[in-house]
Amino acid sequence: MAEVKKSLPDFYALTAREIMDRKLWELPLVAQDASVDSVMELLTKSDYVWVVESEESKKVVGIITEHDILNIFAPEKKMSFFGAPTKKTLHFESYENAEHLMSRHPIVCSPDETVRDILKKMAFHRIRRIPVVENELLIGEITLHHLIKEFHLFMKTTARL
Image (cartoon, rainbow, N blue to C red; front, top):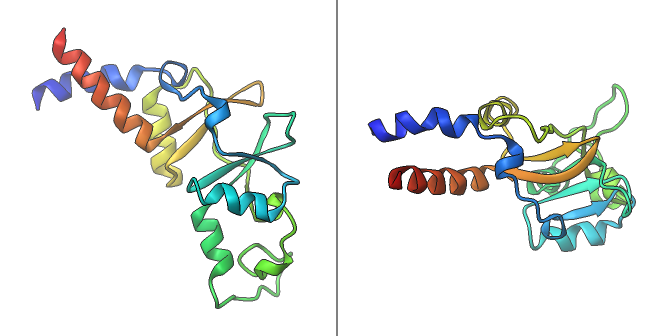
C-alpha cells in the first residue's frame, strides 16, 4: 500500500495529452443533425455518443448517454408548465435528430490538464468520460475505465523501476 501512496502523486501529475485515447476514428461521434436512428445504432455499440457540430467539424456540442435515453424511454413523464420543454418532458416521437437528444455543454478538459484535475471534474460533475478539447476541437477522450487501465499500467511500470 505504501507503494501506491508513493506513486499516486506521480500518476495525478500526468496530463491528459499523455494518457488520452487519441483514436478519433474509434470514438462514437455523430453530427448534431444526424438522425435518431443513427444515434440509436451507435448506442447499440457504445453507452455514449459525442455530438459534434458537423461531420467536418470536430467541435463537441453535446453528449448522448444511455441515461439520456432512459429519460426519454421512461413511461411516466412530468410535464413542465414553466419554460421550454426539456428532453425529460417530451415524448420520444418528438425527437428528430441528435441535437434534440443530447445534453448540451459537456464538461471538457484541455490536453494540459492533469489527471488530478480531470478526476476532480469527473467526481464533481458525476461523469465517467470527458472529451479532450484543444482550440474547441475534439482531439481525444478520457474515460474512467481508461484511467483505471492507465493507473494499472503506471503501477506495473513504477514497480519495475
